[in-house]
Every structure is written in structure tokens, then in C-alpha cells.
Amino acid sequence: MKKNSSLSSYMKGFRFRLYLISTATIALLTAAFASIYVITEMNGYRSTLEREGRLLATILAQNARLPLFAENREALSLLASSTARHPSILFVSISNADGKLLTEASNRKADVGDAIDMDIPITSPGAVMSPDAVLLGRAPVDDKRVIGHVHLRLDTSGVREQLKNLLVASLAIGTLFWINVSLLCYQILKRVTYSFKKLLHGIEEIGSGHLSTRVELEGDDELARAANAINAMAASLELRELENLSLQEELLKAMKLEVQEEKKRVMARLIQTNKMTSLGLLLSSMAHEINNPNASIRFSGHMISKIWADVVPVLDRVREEEGDFYLGGVPFQTARTALSDNAVKIVENSERIARVVQGLREYGVGDGSRVRPDFNVNDAVSAALSVLACQMKQNIQLRTSLGSDLPSISGSQQQIEQVLINLIMNAMQALPNACGEVDVTTRYERGSDEVLVEVKDTGAGISPDIMERLFEPFFSTKLDRGGSGLGLYISQFIVAEHGGRLLLSSEPGKGTLARLVIPVKSAPKSLGEVVAAQDEQHAANPVH
Image (cartoon, rainbow, N blue to C red):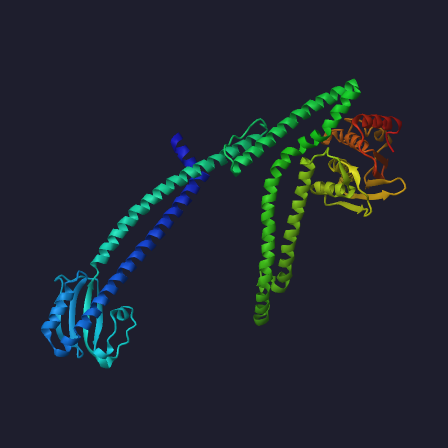
């Protein structure tokens, strides 16, 4: 029972289907090549036999010319007998111009079913042509000069014997070739599918949470490189998960003991690990699962546009000649524009998906600690909105007003993106019943040489008692919905590290305004300066 189950599972497997396809293809190709070879050889053998018979008949016609004039039957008989002794000749006859048989000779008594009959005219000396010319079919024949005919019957039994030998040899060689190539294909498929199976098993193990699993594949092919990439991803995720657990424990200990130096060290590392742990596993599979089919969709959209552009002129002529008609239940005049527009929408939406995925990858795997001297805040806003595109509700109106004269600043674009994502997400979550407006504005304050980013919502607002605690770690009004209480706390830490300020103002019933202020010429501070400035700002004026 177990053997039957294993056999049934093997026959349903990808390897067995590939093996059947490959062996069937090889068998068909082998049969086709063998058939072509046999047909070619047989045609060549038959053509050679015909040329040989035509040459013998031509020589006999030229030699029989004088005896035919003299009506020397004895000489004609001698010539016919001499020609009939050739192995490929079954029957020879010579007749005059009136068709009267003068002589005949036979090589064998038994008649064969398949033979080639050949008739060569005997002409007067004035029409003498070389045997080569007659053999190649370039000899003109004047009926007035024809004085007789030579008739030959060629034996084709050799052709049948040759065909039989060729078939046996081709069958033997083709079968041997098919068996060897099939065995070779099986070994190759076994190697390839084994690697696929091992790679898939490793991915399933890692996806189920066993981050210590490693895929061991030798070689330097695509599968081996994919396995190495998966192993590196699993090791990175495992390390980051361990770091996240360790950092959370250290952070809780630091907050309870209020050890300043411990808090500075943990916060610097928590910024990146908190983001990477939450998104790493999702982004590792999204690139393959979304980008590959999305590329196929985009390519199909382009192909539909090109094909439709070529078809429309033909259909227009049909409409002019035969009147309007329907395509898919829609009049052609309507479908003509609708199909073109839909093809464009396919490409546009596919490109939009690609941009969203790229934004997620840059957010999840980018080097958030890297400082750039030419960082533009508008780029960070666009990247943050791309990441949050999937969070947009139908009843939420997101409006942006990005300043065109913003100067570049020094800092980490990835960290500023993290701050903006937190602020915009908080604004959307503050809207009652996910219905309202969120405005994102950027501008440059020339007087203070600062770049401002404002996120304003039309939500219910925040009460004063909650406003006083918004920047406290682990304080959140959304703990029951998965909030950690670290979003604004980490955001304030990042902004202070860039020498800026994070200001909040709100009135109950009128919404909330979050203002991010970053100086243009200020370089990021050290961790000690950041923590000290953050504590001083929080103690003196926690909410603005």
C-alpha cells in the first residue's frame, strides 16, 4: 500500500511530468530524423538507379543505330543480351519506328511487382547527342529522326532490400539514441528537481518561522545562488529577531532603572531593528510574488495596445464596408476607445504597483542610518505615501501640497520616511469611521532657514490630558489595536537627531496638526546630544 502511494505521488510530481514530456519529445524528434534520413537515402538510391538505367538505355540506343538501319536482328539481339546481363536490368527490347519488336532479352524469368520502365528513342545520326546530355534530360528529340525505340525495365528489388536494411538500422540506432538520451535527461531532471525540492522545503521551513533552517545546495548556478540568498535572508532575519528581543528587554530594563547611557545605546539600535523585524519577512517574499506577475501584466498591457493599434484600421475598414458590429457585446465604436483606454490603464496600474513595491523595499531594506548631504524632504514624503498606498481607505481624501523651492538637507531619508509614515498613519487612524481629510504640506521658511512638513487631519482631536503623555514611551491610545506606544517617542528621537523639532497641536473636535521642523544647515547630532535635548524639550514643553 505504501509502495503504491509512493508511486502515485511520484507520477503526480513535477519531475515525472517533465520526464514524460522530454522523453516523448526526444522520441518524436528521433523518429522524425530517422524518417527523413530513410526517405532521403531511398530517394537517392532510386534516383541513382534511374540515372544508371537511362545511361545504359542511351548507350544501347546509340550502339543499335547502325544495326537498326541494316535490320541486323542478330546484332541487335547480341546488344540486347549484353545489356540484359547488367544486374539492375530485368528486360530489354528494341523496336523500329513503327513499333515492331525486333529483339528482346530478359535477365531473369521471375517477374517483380515493382519495376521502373524506361523508353529511349533511337534517332538517326543527324540527331546524335552525348549520353550525358540524354542522361540530364537536355536532349531534344525530333520525331522525324526517330528510327526506333529501346525499352528497359529496371529491377527495384534492391531498393526494397535497401529500405529494409535502412529501416532496421535506423530503428536500432534511433532506439539506442532515445534510451541513452532519456537516461541522461532523467539524471539531469533528477538533479534539477532535487534542487528545486530542497529549495522549496527550505523556503517553507523559513516561512513557518524556523529561521535557523539553511538550504544546502552546491554549485554556482541560479539555484545555488538563490539558496545562498535565502540563507543570507534567513540569517539576517534570525539575527534581527534576536536583536529585537534583546533590545526590547534592554529597553525595558533601561526605562525602569532610568539609566541614561543604557537608553541611548538601545534607542540607536532599536530604530532600525524595530522597522526591519516588522517588514523583513513580508518584503522578502513580496518581490518575487508581486513583481514577476506584475511584469507579465505590464508586458501584456503593452502587447494589447500594440496589437489593437494594428487591428483598429482593419476593423475600421470592415465597419465602413459592412456597417457597425459588436465586440464582446459592445458596439465597435464604443469598444474601439474602451479597449485602448483599458490597455493604457493596465500599464499605468502595473507601473503604480511596481512603484509601491519599490517604495516598500527601500523602506524595509534601505540603510536607514546612512547620512546624505543632499537629501530632499519631498522625496521622503513621496516614498512614505507610496508605502502607505495600501492603507488608504476609500472615504479618506489625502491631499498634498509640496513646495517646489525646498533646499536639500543633510540627514537620513529612511529615518525621516519612518517619521512621516508614523504621522500620516496616526492622522488616518484618527479619522472617525475612516472618513475625512488628511493634508500633507511642505514648505521652506527662509527667515529661519528651516524646512517644514505639516500633517493635518479632520479627526476628533486630542484631549489635553492625553496630549501631555503623547511622547512618553509605551503610552498609546491604540494598545488594543496593536499599538506599541513607541511611534511618536522614536519619531521625536529621530527628529532631534537631525537637529529638528516635532510639534503637535490639537483641539477636541477640530482635528490635529503635526509639524515637523528640520533646519537646512544643521548636521545630525550625536546620540548623547540627542537624548539630552529630547529630555530637556519634553520636560520644559512636552506638547506644542
